[in-house]
Length: 132
Image (cartoon, rainbow, N blue to C red; front, side):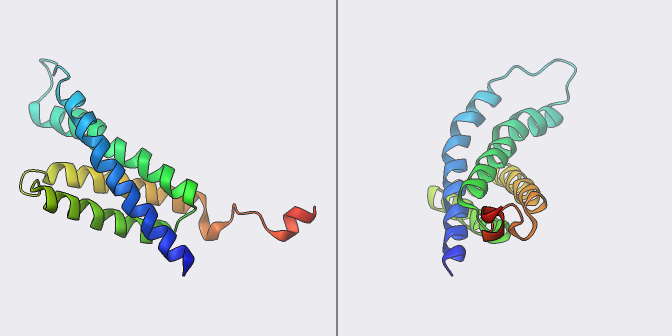
């Protein structure tokens, strides 16, 4: 049961940290000058939301998953709930759907990578490895 609370805490903390960090990073990426050859929709999706939201969510969620050794599925669900709740409370849910989708993609990728690198917590030390 302690692992469940730790995983929920990891998701909520990474969701909150992503929300706060993305405010500043989205401002920076939105201020980048779009090249004349780039379509506005592609630039918006890749440069602004790809770097400013998805990459931030990927890095922060991966850090929280790794440091707290959380269950990736539970942490992802609590990440989604925390970011949705923050968007509703701040009143940005109507205009922030692109950022939400980018956050969900980034956190889902972090959860997937974490799950692939640590299947069944296989990287944890056991008593057998301590005796060797």
